[in-house]
Amino acid sequence: MEKKRIIILIASLLLIIVPFFINVFTIYKLISLALGILLFDVFLALGKKMHLFLIIYLPILLLVFTYSLDYMKTYMFDLSPIYVLENKINNQVSVYNSLFYRIYKCQNQYIFDNDYQMNYACETNLISNVDINTLLSEPREFYRKYKHNFIKVTGKVSKIIGRSKIELKEYTVTDNSINGYVRFNDNSKLIVDLSGEEIGNYKIYDYITVVGLLDSYNKKTEELNLIDTKIEENNLYDNYLTEVIESDKCDNVIKDYTDNYYTLCLDNIYLNYEVDNYELSYALKDKKITFEELIKDSEKETNNGHTFYSLAKFNILSCQNGKNILMNKNLAKDYSLCEE
Image (cartoon, rainbow, N blue to C red; front, side, top):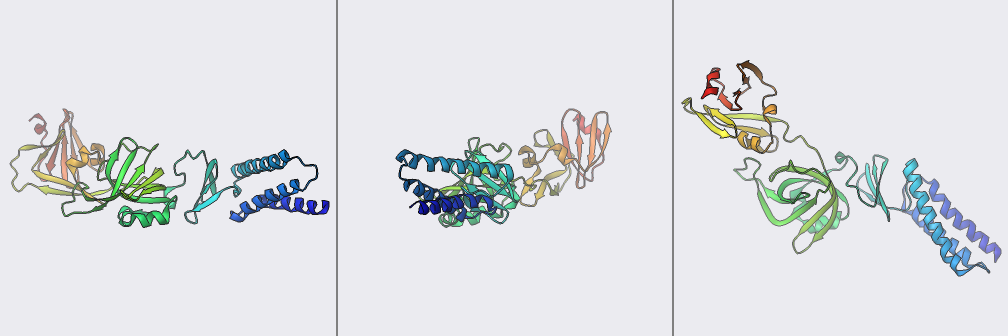
């Protein structure tokens, strides 16, 4: 009997120790540890004078010790974890889930998330993107395939919920889709929890790209929920082409355009971004563009506190009193317009 116990002890120790020297994630390492601890318990149970309390207590102690050792060796030396289940997103990103913590593996770098408090921690460009229209075309099937996985999705904001959530819906671009306007489909929606992210700059109809964990799905309302999210910064509204609509007849009358902005011999100005077309008045009010961004490539001339900016397709007379006059390119400089 003693020889049998020794063989069981050696086998259990090998099953426990060997996984710590294999620096590749595989579920077999966890199975090996579990079998090793089980065999160690059998070794204790076969002992003639072993107290029942020790048969229960020592394996638990061994489990806690190996669990802690696994955490420390991964945290300190970037070695592959054992007491985890892998959610492999692609060859560059994996997420390991354990009982008390989560590990993000980002291009072979481990980032620990104790108590599951952290939002998605890897670079967002490491995950391929899915369009909201594709995601919501078959929400139940999409959830079945990607539930509890991290996904990246791009869509238009259909609703802002409080200070930390937004709603994305399937949408259709219409013939009059100016200023980002689209027609939303109310059949299904994705609720994105952006706790910890800055969403104050986003408005209805804005494009947004987020990475998050697909957490739940309500069959009745066809509502999916995304948590632990991170916003992907984009430059969709950094570059634009300018389109100017000149007045058919220039009557030299300065007209109101938007707050502190006026037009002279211009009907309208459009900013054609890569994804949307915006009226300049709307873009200024919506903070898609600032005055400083508008004049960044202009030539300027100053006279008595007034500044004349020459842009590619129109000019701006910026008056000392804060009035900005958007002028037809063919008009001559006239600083006296600031006095009108």
